[in-house]
Each structure stands twice: as structure tokens, then as C-alpha cells.
Image (cartoon, rainbow over all chains, first blue to last red; front, side, top):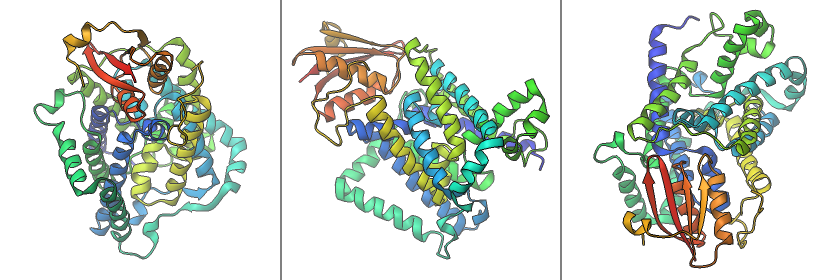
Length: 375
Length: 86
């Protein structure tokens, strides 16, 4: 398969938009779970739920209209590796202080810490590839229940039935909790932030941004491919590695060879372009709102960036997929493996929040916010 | 209630926390740690360059009734978050 230039242009536009929007809303998937379990703050969590709802309706609609087929869905083999990878990724992203997408937009905002996280994620990706071939392949395959992915869309049901049912239940629960008035004022509030000149504003409502990202990701699914981050990062790392050790070094590794199966040569494709442009989009967004600044991390935080990044890199290959791939095309495409990965991530974030950061778990127990003095 | 920038600038913090270069969840952790040391009525101010902290810290202290948020001052990409322990 040869890539045509149009794909690269499309990819850079999508990447730019994602980076711009993620930065504008400070969309942090790690915080969406961590802040809810530690301090009962559900602001970002609601954003993630809106994103999931938008992706579900988007994917359902696209399949119903015949703009894409079930074969195009992003599904991966189902099994315990999804859970193990999810848990490890959850721990990794909590330690690092951001998920795969968070690291990209914060890198664009000038956080040196997240450049280190991204570099370590890539090292983790490569580490996994060289553990996989020759050793881990035989350890991971028995963990799988199916050797092919499975999506609930493969059930012979009308495509929009399950998405509308799930989103309907989400809406019902929201109405029960906030009432119709609460929801109406929530919608009003979420649009409030983009009045005036929205581009120079430092913050847009996360729910509003979630809808936009969901729509853009649906369009990308139709015209290009599903949104993912850690797969392309693995390929970028491989390209960099091939400069040092040559192309054969990459092609001799079963795992990396497979990752370049659709590529004419070992090089940067549209998806890789997309994630590079995410950093650029976030940079422009931060510049416009004057929130760009080179921010040096404290030396004491470097082990968190390195350790968290490496763990995320390895875990994203075991799962496989990062937060973005599993939440948007994964849940949107109703892929069973993604549901398990996300469940694992929640467990991982909980473990890291409770036992590594020893944050007060106010959701579960009314502590006199008693936690480790050394943190 | 939230005070104006002028009103905040005359407040002498009882505890000043340096959160420059820190990201979540450390920005929140160090604020909570200082609030734990503070006596009721004392003012804790955290200086941070992590914009998310201006959302997470007020949300966390309000939701758990640990402190009152007096206000946030933003200057040159840095923020001062004023918290009064309850």
C-alpha cells in the first residue's frame, strides 16, 4: 500500500484539531479517573462520558449509513492480556501524571516532563518488541481467549440499537441525578466558554470539547482510520532506531515487522503525522491563550516521568492500545477488548492513587485527609 | 466569596507552597499537605504554573469541605491559589 499525499494532509489537519482541542479543555484522562476516586471531582469524568456517548452514536450512525463497514472497526484479540495491559497502563499513566494524549498536548504546551514521558514511552514500546520476540510471544498468546477481535456490532442487530440504548441509559441516569433543568443549564454553561473570541481564551468547557472530539474522530474513522497514539509512537521509535541500526534490524523483529506490514518502507505514515501535529496543535492553542511556557520539572519528579513513561510504553503494547484508542474507536466500535482494557485502567489508576501516591480516597472512606507526609 | 485581585494581593499567606514545575497529582498533594498543617482560618497560597491545578485544587477542597477558595491570581503564566482552611 502506498500512501498518497492527501492522506498526510488530512492526518495533519486531524492531528492539529485534536491537539488544539485537548489543550483548550485540559482534557486529562488520568485525572478523569484519579480525581473522581480520590477527591470526588467528576468534572473531567463527565467529559470522558460525553466523549464515549458521542463516539458510540457516531460509530453507530456511520455504520447505519454505510459510510464504513464492520471490517473497518478497530478490534484486537480478546483475553487476559487486555486486563493486564490495562492495569499496567493505568498505573503508568498515574505515575507519569498524564495519559498518552495528555503527554502529547502538554509537550506542546512546553512541559519538559512530558517530552521525557513520550521518549520513555517510545523506549518502552521498543523494549516490549524485543521482549516479545523471542520470549513474550509464547507468554501472551495463551492469555488470549479469541485470536481475533470482537465487536458487539458483529451481532446481527441494527447498528444504532445498542449505541442508542447505552446513551439512553446514560441520559436517564443524568436526568435522575441532575434533573432536566440541571442538564439544560449544563449545556448552556458548556457553550458559554466559547463566546467572544474563543481562540484566545485559555479554557473551553470539557463537555463541549468532548462532543467536538467525538465528531472529528467519527469523521476520521470514515475518511482515514481509527484514532490511535501508541501504535504510531512505536513506529516513530522504530524509524529513529532504524537510522542507527539499519532497516533490517527492525524488520528482523517479528513484532515491529508486523507493525510496518502496510508500509512500503520503514518510514513515517499518516498516523505518525497525525500525532506529531497533535503536539503542534496544542502548541498553537497554548500560544494563542498565552499559556505556552517552557516548564522545567523538579529533579525529584524525573523518576516519575521515566518510570511512568516506560510502564505506559510496555503496557500499551500488551493491552494493546492507549487510553485514546480504547475509549474512542474502541468503545465507539463496541470492541470487547477495549471494554476490558478500560476496566483494567480504572483498577490501575486506583492502585497507583491509593498505594503509590497514597492520596486520600475520600470517595470510599471519610478520612481526616490523613496521608503520607513524605509525598 | 471570591475576592478581587487587589484584595488578594494584601493577604499575607500563613503558608506559601511552591508548586512551580509540579504537575498533577503533586500540585494537589502539596496543597492538601499544607492545609493539613494549617490551623482553621489560616491562609494557604500555592504558586503553580500548571493551569489544571487552578481547577483541581479548588474542586477538591470545596467538595471535601477542607478550605474556602478565596480566589486565584493569574500572572505571566503563573497562578496563585488562595485557600482559607475551614
